[in-house]
Image (cartoon, rainbow, N blue to C red; front, side):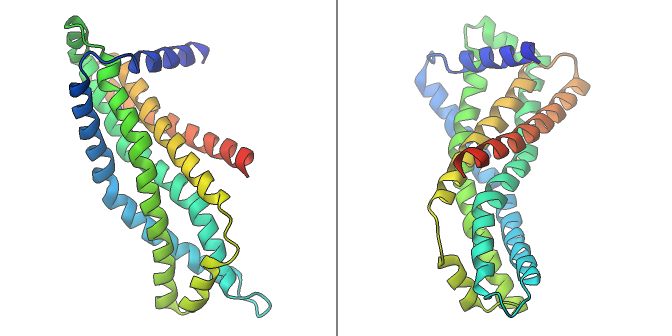
Length: 243
């Protein structure tokens, strides 16, 4: 474990060395931002709307009591969506979509000796391959989380309109009642940390792939599994420290 941790830290150190040519790295960062952000937008939109709707319906079912105001369902759905559903579930989905692609891409370059060719040409391979992916992860995943929050709350409103278990007016009132800005801070911190974990852990597993096509698949699987575990651990630590 300590050997892997040390190699991971050294790889990150190499990834953020001074670039040989800034314009080449900038173009790579823009390409990765499009891949991570625009490429993941569809799946994030779909899961956010349905999660927001399901969360509101389940809260309304649990609070079926004349002593509890119906507006409390909107408040619970708002806090749970911002604090947990949007940042964490979106990160777990992106670990499968983005993380596996990063690990398999870098792993394939390793087994086909393309990384060795870059190093022979004097290119800092970790900086050229990994740093743009990490930068795109910590910049685009928070933006995807903001979209997820908005669509999740919109999905809750849509559920109120369709099911009529809670009136839309009560739901909107619940969204406005007792808002604590700290939940936005926690959501932002989580999304940035999750973006770093997904890209760096999966890139690490892909970069040190050895063997052939079978090992590339295994590296992608390990990257997704390890990043999901680290996301859940970071979720626990951030929640315990900031809340």
